[in-house]
Length: 167
Ligand code: ROI
Image (tube, rainbow, N blue to C red; front, side):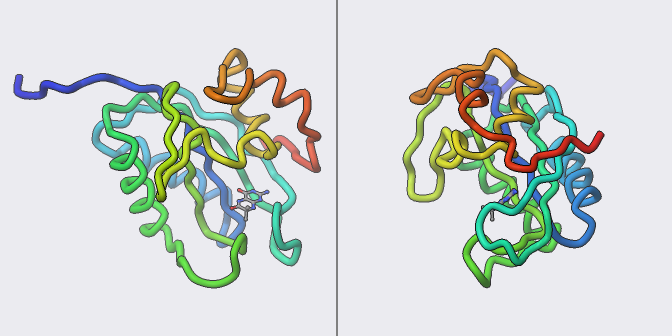
């Protein structure tokens, strides 16, 4: 045993896609995330169809939320998720809040609050996004969100905004 630091953190990842077969994008991202060393899947929500937040001249999104147990530090986890995005054809140019093949966001990392240039947790948009809150509630109904509120309160204040469960 030479692995000294092995604290496991429960983190929540938001998955979103609105290009090139979004359902397949989400399913293959799920598989790729489970194959990251130091990551184990704990739960995966249903898939949801959602109206685009941001510019409206883009296709509807498919969204889901995944709970993982991880030994990776937050920024290492972020870089690993970015590799998955890149492997699935994500191109970081073009319009802000435009269409994308795959978006992976760290929504929560245990009870940690982080405000780094590259990573803010809890995710800044979490409280306003039905396509994050409802799937999150499905897999973690009793969740407390550090520095915000409990999830049930946030869900109660967030209209569905066209969100539809797909499966
Ligand atoms: N809108 C929806 N419905 N779902 C997303 O995952 C999503 N992701 C984004 C922006 C462009 C803000 N809009 C979205 O990054």
